[in-house]
Length: 234
Image (tube, rainbow, N blue to C red; front, side, top):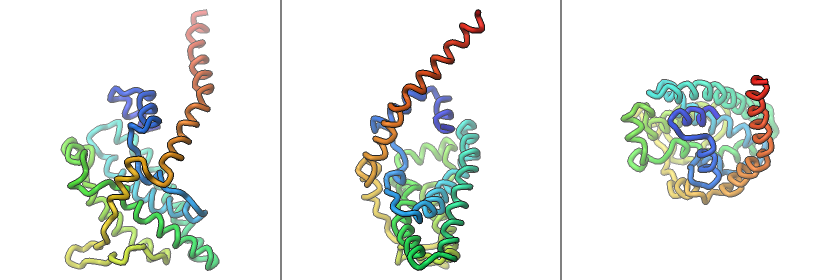
């Protein structure tokens, strides 16, 4: 809602943006199209997905467009809570849980790791909007720079948790002072972005259903708002 409010300052109405989302015209993060299968997924999403979001969004708190920056400050506060909550949940299971719970955590990490690092967007040379966003000062770091920073930070956190990140090519590069990592399956990224992910249709239909089921609430709110000038005039 903060982002919709920021976008409205550029002249696009909330209804137009909702319509673009519900009809599939607007794109949204590929990460929202993967299924959550176990309780461990909840902690892993908090740790990895919200962690990636924070890494991406914190620099935008100092971007060139003030409404966007102010929205991101509030969003990052919330994301930070989710990330800490998720990490704590995983740490509890990995420290005090049963063997089955620990295996459940590792399974969740195996499934969410690659989608999480895809969240930063395509490689810089395949990102259609990055150059303009960087030129305007909206983005302050490139997709690949943020992805690298996230991976470097997450490797240390995974070691504390006691989980293995599912990338056999992940290793420290002394010369680069950063971690090398395996090849990302960008064909999956573009497929999911294009609407053919595991849960694309299900998740989008849920949003449409919620919008339609909530129509009476919006109508009642508008009717109430329209009565106020009449009361004041009376």
